[in-house]
Image (tube, rainbow, N blue to C red; front, side):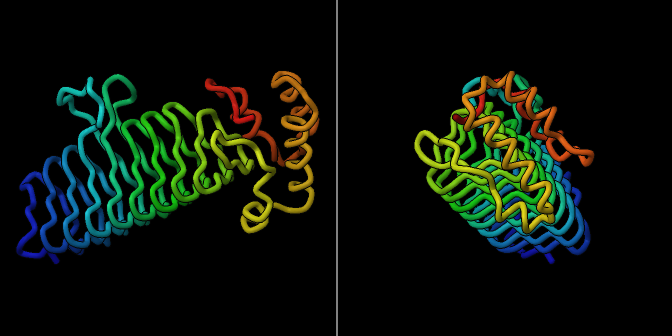
Length: 255
C-alpha cells in the first residue's frame, strides 16, 4: 500500500490499509487512520494527527506555520475523518502564541489551492472552493461554504450555515445563516437554499428571516438586535447559535 519511492519516518504510525503514492514524504510524529489515501507528492511534516478515510490529492502540504515568530516549537495539526483535500492545498501547524494547533473536523471538502493558516479551527461539513485563503486564527463553523478566491482576515469567524460568495474579502465576522459577498464583503440575505437542504422547516426559515431583518434592516444597534432575537427565539432554540455567535464576536460583524 506504500509506493517504494515514498519516504516514511520510522516514528510515523500508519494504519495497515493506508495507501501512500509515489514521492510522498511523511516526516515526524504523524499518525494516520484507516482508509486514508495519499496521491503522489503529498508532504506531511511535524506533529500531525489524521483520522480515517481522508483523501489527499497531489502536492498537498502540511508544514510549519508561516509566522515570523515561529522558532521550531512543538505545535500540531489535528484532522478528523472523511475529509477531501484537492491538489496544492496548504495547511500550517499552530503557534505557541495561540492554541498551538490547527484543527479540521469531519466531512469537509477542500478544493484545489486552498490555504489554511496556523491556529485555524475548521468545523465539519464545510466546503472551501478553489483558492480560498484563511489567515491565521480564523474559525469556520459547521456547514459554512466559502466561494472561490475568498480571502479571510486573521481572527475572523465564519458562522455555521453561512455562505461567502466568490471573491469575497472578509475582514469581520460572518454571522450564522448569512450570505455575504463583495470587496469588502457585505450582507446579501440568508442562505435560504442551503438551510432548506439541511432540513430547516418553514417556521424556522421564517424565524431566521426575521432575525436577519432585526440585525440588518431595522437600523438596530447590535445590543438592540440581540434583545429582539431573544424575544423572537422559538422552543427549538433555532436562534441560540446565532445569539451566541453575535455575543462572542470580537471583530464586529459584516455590515
